[in-house]
Length: 348
Image (cartoon, rainbow, N blue to C red; front, side, top):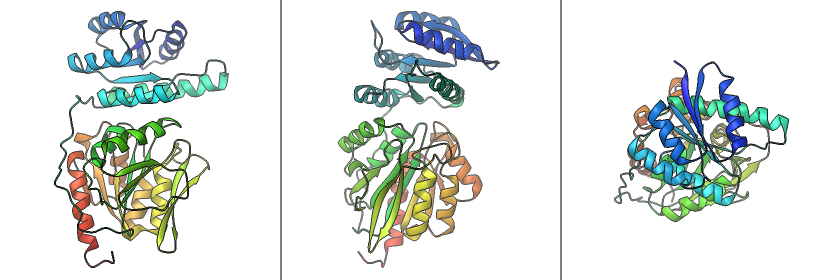
């Protein structure tokens, strides 16, 4: 059975472009192209689409309001069509919070090569969304009891994620105590979106969350997010760990890449690292986590039931690089417990 796709966008040009892309694929079926939420509602009731592409900026009822109502009444995998602006990034993060599976920026319609890249990317996201778990919006179970009995610069928590990761990272970070060891994070996101994501996390967490600019000393009580279009690498400088940005080729199809971050830690801090791989499509991070594990790091993976997409964790598990597989809501407590254990007797 083909994947039934509904396009919802107020731009006739975008509706035409997405419609043409979808109709050319044998495994996809375009069931409609709606200019607004009212037309979309009728088509949803008529065709029960498997995936919806949804524009954030629409007349009458905006995309976020429509998405919120859709997720309450008829949860459906949604790929948001977003603008590459700060306002667009903020709205996209809100959409992911409301239950959207993923997002893609609006295409640059004047560049032929850009359209081809867009075609490949939107098809990948539609097919992935059709297999993803739609999660009803609910607040994470936050344990206010998590405490850390030590504070020092020696330990690092490393987190990698992709599809579904913005909410998973938030749910993980908000549980960590204020004196937690430093957290380094790679989430697959484009430039600009990571800036908004870091600000949002900083407003919600007890840790200070910042987007890396390069050269930061990695300190406890802080979380460091890789910026879009740069790899985050950690190096040792005397007794300190330093964040550095690499403007090199994509790795595992991504920039930033989880593999790059994990591999750097494997080289300089494996025995002082607790690594976590969260929901995401593909295999980025699996090889890096395996190397970390082999060099003495303790490693966790999010379990299938709590993942939006059980791709990256599954690949890491299959490679043999994971010590424990746990539900998302249990990971923070398990990481803190492990850090308390490995820190016994360490210099603080």
